[in-house]
Image (cartoon, rainbow, N blue to C red; front, side):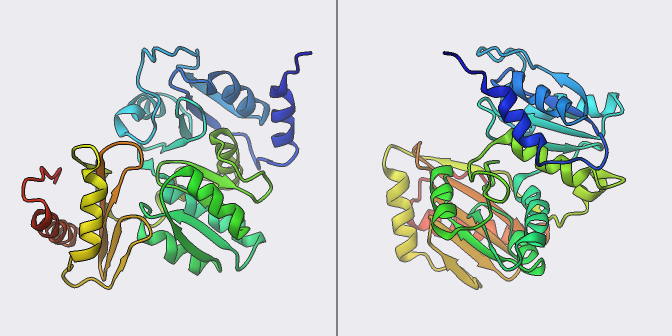
Length: 313
C-alpha cells in the first residue's frame, strides 16, 4: 500500500507551530525537491506566498539550489523589492537547509538565525546547551550566554553535529552551512521547512520582522574561503599548523576541527574539508583593520609551512 506522508507531516507541524499573524513571504526552492512541500506547508500555516522556481527540475535551470552563496539569493532579493512580501526564504536542493533574506535585501546567515532560535528555545529550556560549529560567529556564544544558555562549539559536519546533539541532550544545534537541528518540540534532525516554520512563528510576533533580524549582532566577516590543494595535502597542512604555528596576540587556539584562533577582536579558522582536498578558511573581526591583521597572521603561518600555497586572500 502507498501512504502519502505529506499531509501527516504538515498536520504535525500545524498542530504545534502557531503564527501570531499571517505573513507574506517569498519562497524560492531553486527547482529542488522542496518545491512541492514547502509551498504546501507555508500556505497551510496561513501565509501568502510569492513562489519562485517551485517546479522540481534536476537540471536547475534558474540557479543552483544552494542558499549558502549570495549569487543564488538574487532572485529572492529582487522579489522582495518588487512585491510587498515581508521576508524571503530559499531552500537547498534536498530541502534540509534554509536561506533567509530580509525585506531590504540583507542575507541573514545561519549563525545569526541561530541567535533567534536559541533565544526562543532557551526561554523554555533555561540553562541548556546550544551547539554550533567552528565556522559560526563569535557573537553567537556571547548571545547564548546572555540568554541563559551554555554555548558548545563543535566540529563542522551535519552528521557530527547531529551525533553531538544526541550525546548531550541539547535542545538545539546548528551549523554555518544552514543545517539546523531542533530537538525542542521536534525530532533532532535537520529540516529546512521546519526551520522556516519555527522562524515564521518568531517573526509573526514582530511588527517588523526584517528589523528583528537586522538588529541581531553582526560583524565584519569573510565568506568561506578555500585553499585548493592536492589530494591528502589538506590534512597534512592542518596537522603541521596544529603542531608548529605560533599566532600573534591570540587568546586561544581551539583544535577540535582544524584551528580556530580566537583573538581579542576577532577569529580566524582553517580546517580541512572532509569531502574535498581543500582547507576551508573564515575570518571575522570587529573592524576591517582587525580583519586584515588576522588574515595576515594566518598568511604568515601557512606560507611558513607551505611557501607555494595559493591563498584565496
